[in-house]
Structure formats: C-alpha cells, structure tokens
Image (tube, rainbow, N blue to C red; front, side, top):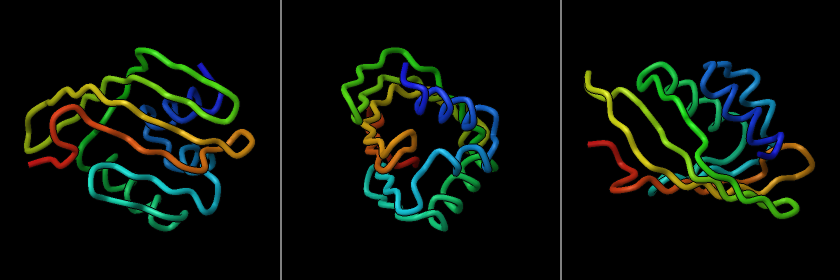
Length: 114
C-alpha cells in the first residue's frame, strides 16, 4: 500500500483530524457522491463532522498504485441513525509528493446517506 494512503487510513480510523489534514495539499479536492469539497477549510468541516457523527472506519482490501495515482478498494463501517452500516467503496487518489491532492470516492449503492 502507498505510504500516503496508509497514513490517511490510519489517521481516519484514529479520528486524528490534524494528522488526516496534514495528508492533504492545501488546495486538495475531495469528491463523494454529489458533494465536492475544496481546500483545507472545507476538508476540516467534512471530516470533523463525519468523525463526530458517523464514527467511520476504513479497511483497505486492495490497492493498485502507479506513480502519483492510487486506486483502492475499501470497506467502510459507520453508524448512521443509530445503526451500523457497511459499504464497499472505491477510492481514486492523485498525489502531489506524499500528500493527497485529489480523491474521488464511490460508495456501493448510494453515496448519500438516507
């Protein structure tokens, strides 16, 4: 697994917002479903809200890396409206050095939680 993705997942699962944000470029773009988040302020809002409300964890199932591009198959577990939900997700990341510059995440089924 790429070091950048390993650090991202470890910070995400550890709910370490500071470490998670350090893994992104200042102008990073994160796309999930219909939401597009740009820059550090919006990333901070997105991830702090998710960590507090959904209590998500990620498990990496498979990774393909080529230069500054990473494709990863992951399992996401989260709590929504009091019940645990499990989703297969695919994430496509572009790196700038050792930091994530952009990510597009696809959740099996709907990316929007009902």
